[in-house]
Length: 389
Ligand SMILES: [Zn+2]
Ligand SMILES: [Zn+2]
Image (tube, rainbow, N blue to C red; front, side, top):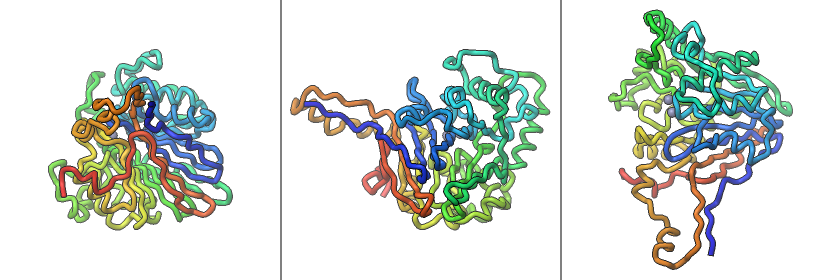
C-alpha cells in the first residue's frame, strides 16, 4: 500500500483571471506570485526551502515563461523575504526590479552598494550581498526602480478593464531618517543598528476598475512600540505616529484614501500584533475580505490570538503552514500512527515542506472565484484555536 500526500497542484490561470499565489513554509519565508492577466506576471519577495526557490518552482511547474514576468518587487531586505530573489531576477530578464526608495545608494552607501563583490549567484553569504547583487544587475539592465509612498507605478488595461498598481510606502519620514543615519556614519562597516527594514517596507495596492482592491502589506508594521498591546485604541494614536510605518499610510495617503475597501489582504508582518492596524481592519476591508498570512516561526508568528482575531475579521483566513510550535505539538499524523501500529506498510510520505494559497478573481466580471490550497496551507478554523478560547 502506498499513500502519498497531495503535492502542489497545477494552477495556471486563463488570460482573464487575476490570480494570487502566496507561498511559504512552516519555518519562515514569504513569496507571492501574481497573474495580472494575459499571461503577464509579477512576483513580490522570495523564499527558499533548501535549494528550491518557491516562486521559480511555481513558474516551472505551471510552464510559465520567465520572460512573462514583468515585475519583481523586493519589499525589504530581510532574509524571509529575500532568499532566492537573485535567482529569480537572473532568470526573469524582462522584469523591472522594484525596491524601497531608502535603498538608493546615496542613502545606503555602505550597507549595500560598496559591499558587493562578484560572486556565484548561489553563493551569497548574506542577505546584503544578494540584495546588492540584484540592484547591480537590475541597474545594468536599466530595470531598477525605487518605490515610495503614493508612487503611481503602473496603470494598464486588460480586456477593457483598468488595472493599477501603486506603492503605499515607504514614507518621506523614513527617507529623512535614513539620510540622517547614513550621514552620521563615518566608516564602511556593515551595521544594522538604526536601520528599520520593516518600517521602510514597500506595501503594494493593486486595484481593478476601482471595484476589486488587493493589499500586499509586506512587513510594514504600525509605528507602535512592541509592548503597546492596546492596538484597538491605536486609531487615535496614528496621527502622532504618522512619520513612518503603516501609520503613515493611514494618515494622508492619496492612494489609500482614494481607493475603496480591500477584498484581499496579504496580511502585514506575518499576522503580528504590530502588523495589525485597527483603522485598516475597522474601516477599509470588505465583509468578504480574504486574508492570507505567512509564518515567521523564530518570533512565534503568527500568534494564535492574532490568528483568532483575523479569523473573526476575514471571511476566509488562510495560513501557508502551521507554525513549527504547532507542528511539534501535533507531530504524529494519522498515517504515521498507522505505520507505527503496523496497519499499513511501504508508505512514502512526501515532505510537506511548504504551502500555496491560490486565490482567483475574474477580471471580466470583477468577481472572486475561490481559493485553492496546496501543501501545508490551511484555512483557519475553530479547531486551530489551541492556546485560547
Ligand atoms: Zn517578514
Ligand atoms: Zn521583515
